[in-house]
Image 1 (cartoon, rainbow, N blue to C red):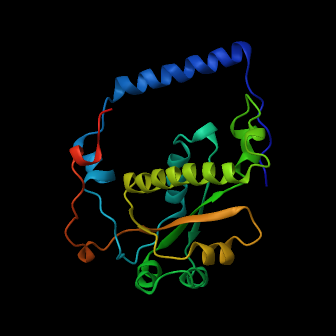
Image 2: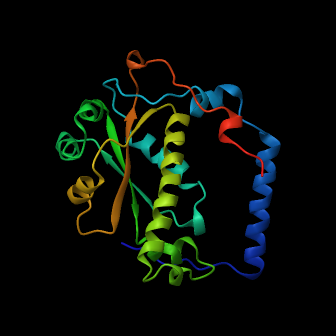
Length: 226
C-alpha cells in the first residue's frame, strides 16, 4: 500500500525546519566529534561475520530499533527502496532453505532470524511521500532499467546500514550470498515488484565457530589519488 503524499513545507515553515536541521547537526558535532575506538571496533574494525548462533531470540522491539536506525541513512532522493523480511518461523525457514547452497542451510536454520534484504523496483511510487517538495516520479516511470539500477544500488546501501545498525545495538550478523535469488523471488515475492538482494543471518553469535580474520587490501592497493 502506497503512503499518502506529504505536503512540502514552504515559506516561514520551511525556513524554520531548515534552521532546526542545521542547529541539530551543530549540536551533535558539539556533543561528539568522532566515535571512540571501541565503538569503531564493534561496528566494523574488529567485527566479524558469524556462522554459528546461540539459541537466544531477538526481541521484535530491537528489530524495530535497527530498522529505525537503518531508515535514517541517506539514499538517492530519499528513495528508501530496501525492504526487510525477517524469516523466523520453522515453516518460513524451510521455504528459504530451498534457495540455499547446502553448506549454508545449517547456518540459516540455526540463526534466530535470517533477513531477506530486498528492494522494490516500484519504489518511485512512494516518492510523493518521501520526496514531497518535487515530483520525481517521471524520472522512473516507464523506465524499468533505471528503476532497477537505482533500487539495487540504494537497497544495497541500506543493507549495509542494516548490518552496521545491528552490530551497534549488540547483535551479530552473517551476510550470505550463497543462494538463488530466482528461487527466493519465486517463493516469497511472486507477483510483486520486490526482488531479493542478499541474505543476512541475525542474532547472538556463538564465537567458538570463528577462525582467524582474513587480510584486507592495504590503502596503497585499494586507494588512489587522482
